[in-house]
Image 1 (spheres, rainbow, N blue to C red):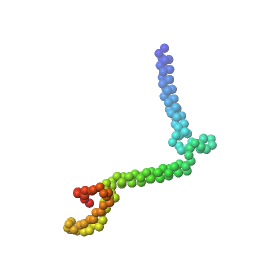
Image 2 (cartoon, rainbow, N blue to C red):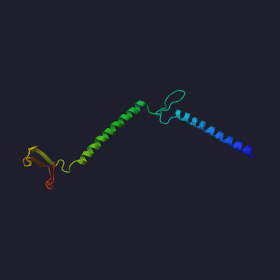
Image 3 (spheres, rainbow, N blue to C red):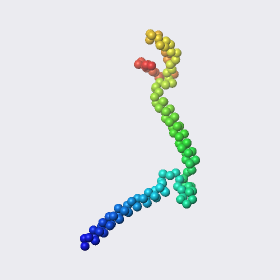
Image 4 (cartoon, rainbow, N blue to C red):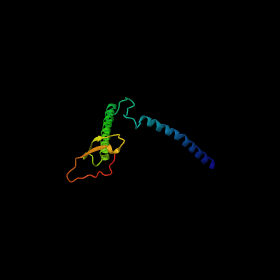
Length: 130
């Protein structure tokens, strides 16, 4: 009585091992036909693309528009970063007329500063350096 049961179990295991590769090959065949990464689906019989998907030209235009938008955002971001790095005195203090540049004696070097401040506004220049 034990021998027929063992034979049936062994045949069942062998059938299971043989069926698994066939099942995987069928899945691979289906995946290659309906590839989700494809831009457009094609009908096997006609080769026509579905109207749901964009054409390559429309996709290229969308990519160009996205690149332009990215460049615009980068330009705006760089402008904002430059504004944040500015001195708090930007536009309020002007430096002009630099005299004695590269002199051996630092006492002979002069810079003229002019201001564009409001009446009640003051600026401490102690500790400034170039």
